[in-house]
Image (cartoon, rainbow, N blue to C red; front, side, top):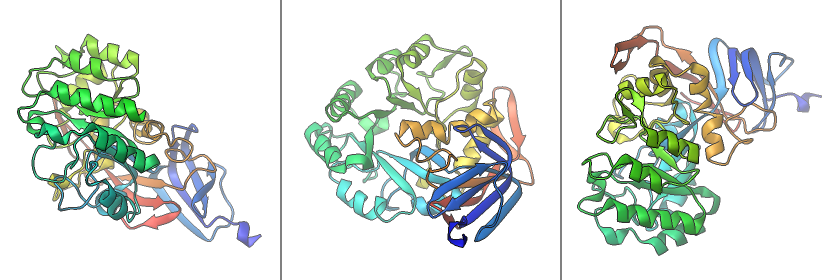
Length: 378
């Protein structure tokens, strides 16, 4: 019957889904906001058909470290313009809102965006609202207020975000800020996404990692600082031990990080990040090509991360971290119809500088984004 036809069939030269094992020519059929079929045998009539013979069709990309928010805030950019239109259908805000800015963020950002946004709430009451370090005033790390706001937020709140660079903390002891952040996480039963103390080198990496708990995320994992995860070309023991305990590692590919020489050394030593993310924020405005998930994937692939692992780490990997596996990050029938088609740029560019010289190649570009069954302009 006509009313049982898919609304849309998207065919591509390559359909990849780490969750279901698809990797080859095929198509995905969509009805309403759901995937109804996927694989090489999808065919038949549909209300609309799209064909990308040179494209790679993936689940909608999931960016586990980004800064969606009001463009007047310290780091924030419009999610629909800078993330959804660039292939990321789901993003996790890394600390943009705190307990005092949460209700505004919920109503005006999460509530109005087409992008699916989850929040890692800042341990600071203001979050990244003002153009200053978010925890330079210790009294703003208010445990009770943060716990109450997180409980109010329900499923919209993924966990706690804390950044402990010297710019963020000022003269405060980072250990005390971390202690309070862990208390918030313990009282709410939520995980932490953690930006390490890397300068000055006044807190050893091993001690920082020891404060994290299974399921917590160490972001900016490929920084090239005194507290780097790589020493003399090898992953340091405390990092392997943290992974054994269940600590997760995320790229957070923003300005100043990751260092792709560190990433290359880590990958050669058998250490892949669990998730690939962009740290996209307002200082990336004007980048050419734009700073986005497809470009980040191209760069991390260029220094040795296997393509299939990179795709996994930007789809089902972060979907599981967010507790949304089965709903996003997959092309399985019944999942939300969040889809991304990527293509290679026609001309190679400098993708990365690393210890073994520059890496040139095609940048990945978003050709099509679909969010909950609706085509998004790219």
